[in-house]
Picture 1 (cartoon, rainbow, N blue to C red):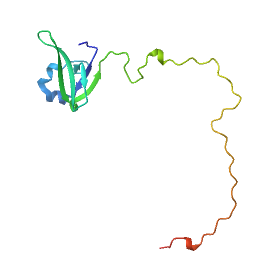
Picture 2 (picture 1 turned 180 degrees about the vertical axis):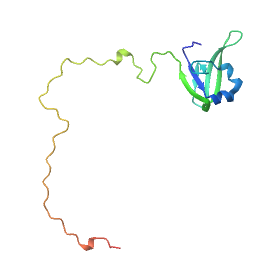
Picture 3 (picture 1 turned 135 degrees about the vertical axis):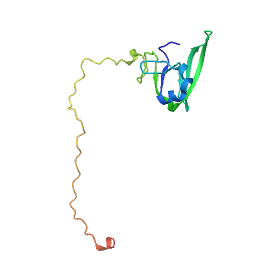
Picture 4 (picture 1 turned 45 degrees about the horizontal axis):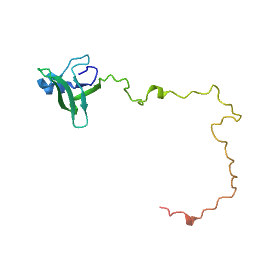
Length: 141
């Protein structure tokens, strides 16, 4: 397996302790601590499925599937060497350039306005308010 491709899976210390000697052959030591280097990973179910490329004693290549509960995984790091990695649109750089701008924008004669001009308010009515009668009020008490 190419060392620059795949995933690095870090397990919680309690998970390493719980798995004991069974996990030891699959662990590698690195600057971030013990981890599992795998070729593929599936996080869809309740178990994290890791595909590990290994070689037998006879030199034959074999793919191993190692599954651990999701609660045991502390972090998964992509170790791919893809140039196009991240959350930006996957567009060729030549297609991402903006079209050229004209050297000078055309001048306008009208002043710039941030808001439309205010409309004229309707004339206020000067009628006296109608007297309220006691019959229109709800009963007290």
